[in-house]
Image 1 (cartoon, rainbow, N blue to C red):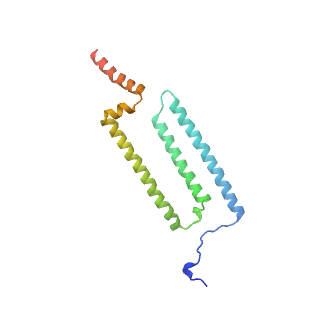
Image 2 (cartoon, rainbow, N blue to C red):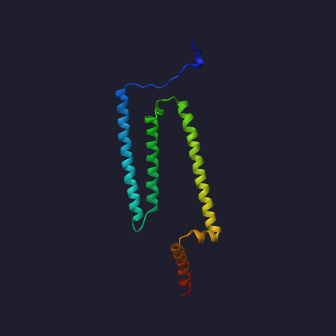
Image 3 (spheres, helix red, strand yellow):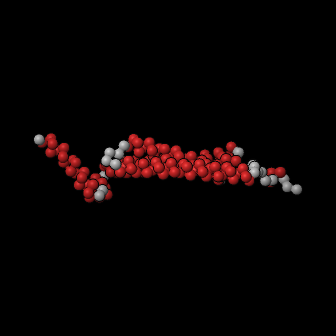
Length: 153
């Protein structure tokens, strides 16, 4: 006879196969609908960027919607297909809290890298001139020269 500390503890409550298949089918349809909505939003973002006067606020709002829909899809995938929704709360927190810390870690590095790039572009003129495409560099110089001409007139 085994010691009680070494017995297997299972909290997995699989009801019936038919009910589980119904839940999987429902989740798959929901994920498909969310994906189609995301693709529609992506196409509209593309068309807004392609237009003559893109609205940055509208694009930002659409990108936020895509992020929210992606998080909803991730929740359903983890909850149903990876069976995390059937676990006890402590097990869920054991997985979710380190994941949130990892996401914070990635965001912190992206923000820090962007700050470094911005500061380097602002203060290191050699870096700015060598990394900018020639066409863009010429257009920037022309824009700087135009106000100087209008001030002389």
